[in-house]
Amino acid sequence: MDTLRYPIGLFTYNEEESGQLFQVWIDEIKQLPTKLRAAVEGLSEVELDTTYRPQGWTVRQVVHHVADSHMNAYIRFKLALTEENPTIKPYDEGEWAQLADSKLDIDISLKLLEALHARWSILIESLTEEDLQKVFSHPEHMSTITLRESVANYAWHGKHHTAHITERFKRIG
Ligand code: NI
Image (tube, rainbow, N blue to C red; front, top):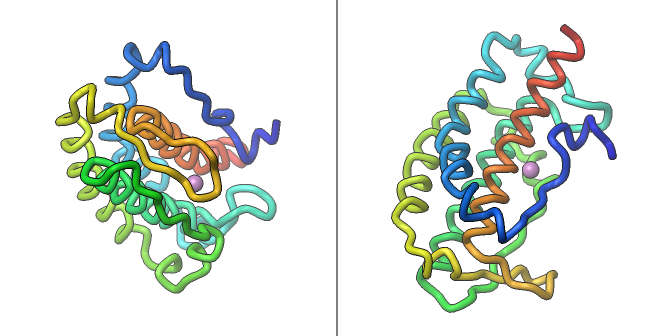
């Protein structure tokens, strides 16, 4: 296991414990913008432009990536809620992270995440058990993904990238 790349481990999902953990995941999604903001607090521009691990993204790119990823996720949720098993559009996250808007002030994406997660968590909390069983498909994978699993996945994803930043600055003190 590459612990620099996967500081909190790989994403795992167990349908049986999902009832018990569901509220935890919602809380993690709600808290992500605050946790991410805390992780980058006080970092200099030079620190923001250093990589969180060798050959990894810079801290700045990580913050903008979380916004890119969660904007896509939000759209996937809305598609799954309003269409029958929609096929979602994958995107090349590495190429997205090279575009000009990944070099912007991180506060722009932190504010975007605050607004996005406010809407997203209210949407998730409104979902019935039937809604949570709704699915979308990834064109390159054979299986469908339920919204319930997707909530778990994005709770993990926010913590995964926040840990890239917090673990990096723990290592260098
Ligand atoms: Ni990611």
